[in-house]
Each structure stands twice: as C-alpha cells, then as structure tokens.
Amino acid sequence: MIRDYLFHFILVVGFFPVFSQVDLIQNVYNRNSTSLNGSWHYIVDPYENGYYNYRLMPFDQQESPNAGAFFLNSKPKSPSDLIEYNFDIMDTIQVPGDWNSQKPELLYYEGTVWYKKSFDYTFTKSQGRLFLYFEASNYKTEVYLNGTKLGTHIGGFTPFNFEITDLVKEKDNFLIVKVDNKRLKEGVPTLNTDWWNYGGITRNVKILEMPEIFIQDYFIQLHPEDTQLLKGHVLLNGEDLDRKKIRISIPGLNVDQVMKTNTAGYVTFEIQAFDIQYWSTAKPFLYDIVLATDDDKIRDQIGFRTIRTKGSQILLNNNPVYLKGISIHEESPLHGGRGSTKEDAEQLLTWAQELGCNYVRLAHYPHNEHMVRLADQKGILVWEENPVYWTIDWENEATYQNAKNQLAELIARDKNRASVIIWSMANETPNVPARNSFLSRLAEFTRTKDATRLISAALEQKSFEDDPNTRTIDDPFADKVDVLSFNQYIGWYDGLPEKCGLIRWNIKQDKPVIISEFGGGAKQGYFGDKSVRWTEEYQEDLYIQTLKMVDRMEKVSGMSPWILVDFRSPRRVLPKIQDGWNRKGLLSDEGKRKKAFYVLQNYYLLKKMP
Ligand code: GCB
Image (cartoon, rainbow, N blue to C red; front, side, top):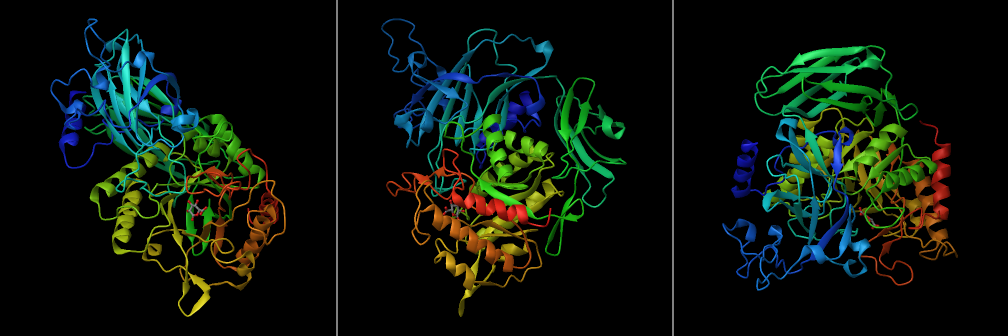
C-alpha cells in the first residue's frame, strides 16, 4: 500500500500526468461492492476558486492549504470564521449522471463541478483492503477522501480505482470529487467533436472490499490458431506474492487446473480443452469460470471463439461472417443525456436486434460495461473505439500517452468479452506523418496487449484526381489494420443520393472492408418528396441508393451506418429541424422509427450470409 502511494507520488511529479493510482481491477462487475450512487451535493466552480488560491497555486499542492480549499470540506469552528462554501446546504445531483441533462442551467456548461458524498463504513483492517472504483467520469477527475488526495484520472469513458484502506473511518467519511469537462486542444478527444460533451460522474461509483492478496487481473481467451487451447494469464495484487496458488475451474469443460505465480504474483497458462461449445452470434454460449486463490475467489462468464481475417473475409470460428451493423452513441434512450444503466443498454441493443443487426459499432469512445456484457449474452459482435477523433494534437507526447492509457483501460476492462472483436484506434483522422506514427504506435501497443482480436480505424475515402467518381482508400495506416474501415457520405455531404449510382470503387488492399459510416439526416415525422432534405423520404432514398452501391462493391464484409438514434450535438443548430440534435438516426430521440429503418431492416433480413 505504501508502495502504491509512493508510485503515485513519483507519477505526479514526473513528466506525464498520472492516470490512476493502482492498476485497474478486472471484473468489478462480478465483485461484491458497496454503491456510492445516489444524491451527492455539488458546487459549480467555473473559476476553480475551490482548487486554486488567488496566485493560481493548486491548494492540493500546498503544505497547509487554507480553509478555502474545497477538498478539505471546511466548516466554521466559531461564528467568526470565514468559510465561503458549504457543501451540505448545496443542491444535490444524481450519481451516476451527467450534469447537463439533469440541471437545465448546466446544459451547455463546460468546466469544474465539485461533488461531495458522505458515508459511514464498518470495516476492520483484518478484513482486507478497500478500493474506490469509478466506472467513468468525464473528463479530468481529482479525487479526495477525508482531506487526502487519492489521485487524478484523465479521460471520460474508462474506469479507474484507488486504494483507500488506510483512510476510511467508521463514521462521517467525506469523499470530494472535482470533475472538469473543459475541452482541451491536447485532450483525447480534442476541442472539436460532433457529440455532446456531457460532464460529471457519468457511471457508478463503488467501494470494493478485497482480501489482502487479491486477483487483480486475468485474461482467458481461445488461442487464435488453436481452437482447443485456452491461453491467458492471472495477476495478483498484494505483498509477498511468490509461488501463490491459483486454481482455475471451468466446470462446463471439465477444467480444474492449479498453477503457481512467479515472484511478482503473475502466471501465464495454456489449457487444453475439448468439445468446446464456441460462442457465436447464433449461439452465444458463455462458460462459468472460477478463479480462486487461498484468499480470493472471482467468477466470470466467458465465451470462446476465434476471430481472424483471410483475404477479404472476416472469419468467426473459421466461418465467414457478414457484419450487419449499426453505429451507436451512448445516450440514454429512456431519459436522455449520457446513458449508463443496464436498462439503457438493453433498450439500445434490442433496437439494434430489431433492425436485424448481428454487430454494433460503439462510437466514438468506450461505452459502459453493460453494453458489452449484454452483447456477450445476446450474441452481438462489437467494435470498441478509442476517442481519437478528427484532429488531435498528434505531435504531443502527453496526448499520445493519454490516448494509450484510455485504450489500455478499455482493453483491461473488456479483454475477456467474446463479443468484442475489433479495437478501433481512431475516427476520421488526417493522413499526415505525425498522425501515422501516433496511430501506428497505438496499434503496436494494442497487439502487445491482445493478440486475439482485430485492429481497425474508421478511415476516409478519396477520389482519384483525374476521376472524381472512382473512390479508393489511400492511407498508409491501411497497412497497419486487419480490417479496412472507412466512412463515406455520398448522397449527403457529397452530392445527392442518386450520385451513389455513378461511383465506382477501386479498393486495392486485400483486406475485409467495413463501411463504418454512411447516412443522412431526417426529422422524424417530416414527410415530403425524396428530393427535399430532412424529409424521411430523402433519408429513405439515400439508404436505398447506398445499399445498391454497396452491392456493387467488392470485399465488403460489413457495415455500421450512421446511426441508430438521433443524438445531441452542439454543432447542429438548424432551427425546427436539428435544434441541437444530429438527425441521422434511424430512430428519433423518442425512439420512433423513420422510414429508412425499414430499408436497412429489409436489407439485413434478405442478406444471405450469417
Ligand atoms: C462523421 C463522424 C461522426 C459524425 C457524422 C455526421 O463522419 O464520424 O461523428 O456525427 O459524420 O453526422 O456528420
């Protein structure tokens, strides 16, 4: 524990920002925990008055910060004391949840909000260790417990945790969290996106009670080339980890194997398994798995499948698969704002299934864990994406470290999910040398973390100079991906739908192709001629023409049109049509189907390939 704090200290004063104090704990989803969700008091602090003194020095870096530091939760000791804040009489806000959709006056707010939660906790150290776990908080989060800083996390969509064993008291703990969602040029994502920058503690917050030595991380997947070999590793966390016994049991496969860790508490393994029922979209079979040490026991439900490419095909369990997909943003279909609950995920994936999908692209950042857990159960293949979007600060090493860290946290969380078949590095990034090396580094890093999945990125297409109607993918990063994906908007940003009939495709790479986006806007309930923008008929025609074009293309192994549901975007200001919403959804924000929904549904229904 001391070691962790020391490590944290070194990172804080080091060159790069610290991302989290303790490496991520895997499969918190199946651990017993105490929820800190519910009502939290909050203070909106646009000038960061509770963070900096008047010389702009952060209070939390001063030896004796004055009582104005919000993280101290100061209270007057006598009636003459001057303290200009008081969490306990402030308004409350729900956690999890973004502030923009909960408080009308914060709809457009981008900046710092302080959160405070008080709690009692009965625990003695002989019971083990305590960790505070955030599923996500957007974007920069500083966490303090009982006046002590736990650390900082950067990135809005991935989990992080801190050890709190030595800090928790039986009564009156106060947890103070500063969340700042200011967009930054050097951030990931950067200043410019086409989605709402929902701020706040957007997913669950929990306290985990763990044994002294616990299973921090594990990876169990089928060997990509040997369908009877399970491969993976387990990592323990604690003191004196040498030669610790770990038992892995998969009753459904008669697997019961004991292994011993090295001095660092780490062990890799290979297990022969016969008669495996492979996970597939038709039969998404999940095995119950138990990992146990003398002190700890964790269960999971894991599916085994292979995913690889051969020429222009994607092979799932060695059989070609066509990805009948749709792109999805993480907005709640039930109450608006950032989605985070199981019910939100259930609704979005049910709509995707009603559309006939066997695949979803979770755009443009990591979605909550319910999405992939449910996709595992429902047999839906998943593309997961790092929020490297448009033009980020390619030359900035801290930006790279940030992007890498967010991707690492996503892989750490989801690497045991059979549904996840593609890690996407980025979306619509410019073909310039600094970006090429940035994305190549990310891809190489990803392969070292996980050799069992495919790598892609949503690239851009371009026309030949002398022939605007012939399109190709001319991008050096195309050589680094397993699946060649690109977005195209012929019929919307690029001519009218009938233009689809003129376009020829000349894709040279011998790789499977995914059209990661196409689409156009329609205001649900606005009917008219198909030549009139924003009518449902225009969007319907765009889908008809695009799908005819796709049928003439070679190498296409799937698509994820843009997008399942209308979503909020401050870029979309056209009155009476957009009013702050991107209208390219096949469903309105109220969940009403537009005409184009049925065009795609019919196309997927008639598609021969599984
Ligand atoms: C794109 C982007 C997506 C936008 C979409 C649009 O190419 O990848 O984030 O929302 O176009 O609607 O313009």
